Amino acid sequence: MPEDRVFIFDTTLRDGEQSPGASLTIPQKLEIARQLAALGVDIIEAGFPISSPAQFEATSLVAEQVQGPVIAGLARAKEADIEAAAKAVAPARRRRIHTFIATSPIHMNHKLKKKPDEVVKMAVAAVECARQFVDDVEFSPEDAGRSEVSFLVEILAAVIEAGATTLNIPDTVGYMLPYEYGDLIATLKRDVPGIGKCVISTHCHNDLGVAVANSLAGVRNGARQIECAVNGLGERAGNAALEEIVMALHTRANFFGGSTALVMGVNTKEIYRTSQLVSQLTGFVIQPNKAIVGANAFAHESGIHVDGILKERTTYEIMTPETIGLGGSRMVLGRHTGRHGFADRCRQLGYKLTDTELEQAYARFVEIADKKKEVFDEDVAAIINDEIRVVEQVYHLDYLHVASGTGTLPTASVRMKVGGQTKQAAACGDGPVDAAYEAIREVTGLSPKLDSYSIRAVTGGKEALGEATVRIIENHRTYIGRGVSTDIIEASAKAYVDAINRMVAAEGMTPEVKEPL
Image 1 (cartoon, rainbow, N blue to C red):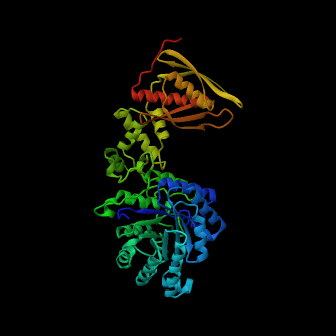
Image 2: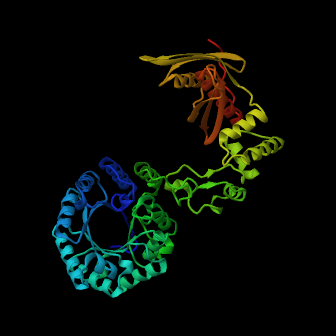
Image 3: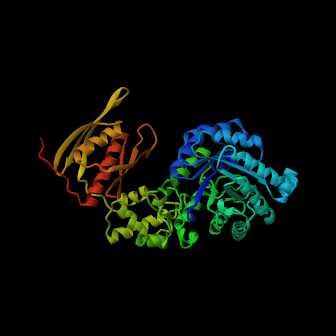
C-alpha cells in the first residue's frame, strides 16, 4: 500500500460514546455514521457488539445501512466476542474485526492474571479466529504505552504470522509523551518481523493533553492509520480529536510526508457539520477556544490581528474557515477592536461614513464595548442609525394590509412611494411577514437574500412597541434594517424597507420608476 496514504479510523461511536454521559440511541448512531461516511473517514468503529444487545444492533445496522467506510466491530481476545463482532459487521461490504488484549505488566498481573506466554497464545488464537470470518483483522496490545518493548515485538510478530493486517499501538491511559510515542512507533517498525505487510496505527488518549501530538508523532515515525474521535470524545479526558488530526495533516502535509506529501480521503469541508452534529446529539458543548471547531477558532478581536487579517489573511490564519465548511472568519467587535476593524464592519453593513462620522461612531462604540463582552452588528447599526445619520429613504412604506389566519393563504398588499411616484403590489407567502416581504420585492424589483430576522418587545404592557431587525445580503455585503411599531407585521415591513434603503444607498442603485398604470 502507498506510504503516503493515511487512514482515518473513527471511534466516536465506540470509544467516544464511552464518555460519561454521552450515551447515544441507535437512530442517533446511524445519523452520526452516515455523516462520518460523508466526511470520508476510512474506518468506522461502530461498537463493541458483545457488550450489550443495543451495541450489537447498532453495529449491525451501521454495517447494513452505511456505505463507503470499512465497518469495524471491537472484540476482546475471546471466541464469543469475535463471533459476535463477526455477525454484527457481516452486512457490511467492507468489514473488519478489531481484537485486543492487554500487554503491560500491570494489566497482565492484576487484570488478566496471565503470564506473558499465555497472553501471546490468546492473541494468536484471537487473530486466527477472526480470520475465519474476515480478511481484515486489527490487533491492539492494550496499554502498549506501559508495556515492555521486547514483549511488544514478540506479540506483534506472532499476530502478524497469525494473519493480522493492522497493528494498533494504543496509549490506553494517556501516559506517554510525543517523543516517547514516536520513538516507540519507529522501534516497532524497525524491529518487528513482517511488520511491513501491515498498517501501523495509533490510538492515543488525552489524559496529559497530548493525544493529538502523540498521534502525529506516530505518523511522523511511520504510522499510517490514526484512531480518533470527533471533538476528542472518549473515556476520561478523551481521545485524539479527529478534526485536529485531519487539519494538522492537511495543513502540514509536507512536514509529515517528507519528500512526498501525505494524503487522506477526508472531505475537510464536512468537518464543522460533523462536529456540530456530534455535539448536538451527545449534549457535549464545544468549548469556544477548541481548536478547529470552537466558536473562537476563526474569530478575531484584537486590533492588531484584525488589521493584519484585513490586509492579508495569512498574517494570522494558517488555514481558512472555508476549508472546514464555514462561511468565513468572524471579526468579533469588542473592547480590543481597533478603528480599522470597526470601519471595515461598518462598510460590511453598508454604511459609508465620513472621517468625522467614523470618529464619532467609534468613540460611541468604545463606550459600549467597555460595558459589553461583545458588540453585535445590531449595536453598530443602532450607533449609526440613532446617533450619526439617517439614510435617505428612497423607498417609503405608505400602506400595508395583510390577511392571514387558519386555513387562509397569507396575502399582503403594499403601497410605496418610489422617487416621488406611488407603486403598489400584492403577493402571497408562507406567512404574513413573508407575504409582506414578497410584495415589497415586487414593488422595488429587488430581491436581496434575507439572512436573519428577529422581533422583540421594546416596551411592556398591552400596547408594547415591537422592534423588528432584519439582515439582508447583496453582492456579499450585509445590510441591517430596523423598524418599530405596535403592530409587529408593520414593524417587520418597515425593517425590511429600511434595510433595502441602506442597500440602495451603499450600492449607488437608482430605483426604476415606471409611469403609474
